[in-house]
Length: 136
Image 1 (cartoon, rainbow, N blue to C red):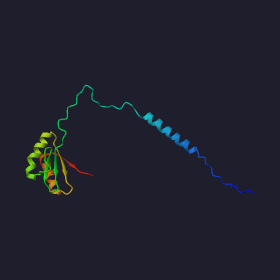
Image 2: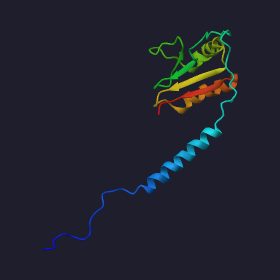
Image 3: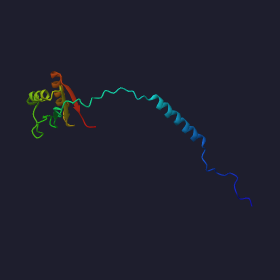
């Protein structure tokens, strides 16, 4: 009785495509190793050089609260926000003491744009660089 089928499934994989892949990878890595150079100039400090110490790690910040009032950091109290007229001189002192002509502006998501724009106008009038802080 001839019950066996004539079509049999081969379980072997073709090795020709695998050899092509290995050959291409070998050529790629050989070319990349030839093209890479170890003579890239690096400007590293000498071990004897001392870096200047960081004197002020805190960035001067104005926080705009939900009720459109302001807190000046560092040193401000989040429980006692102030009006814009009250913080003008305080912000100038904090920015001057930091040694950097920039001011970080952080605000509550429900704060009015006008409250933030007042701080931006203050930055523009004093030629400070505004840095807007936001959450993603």
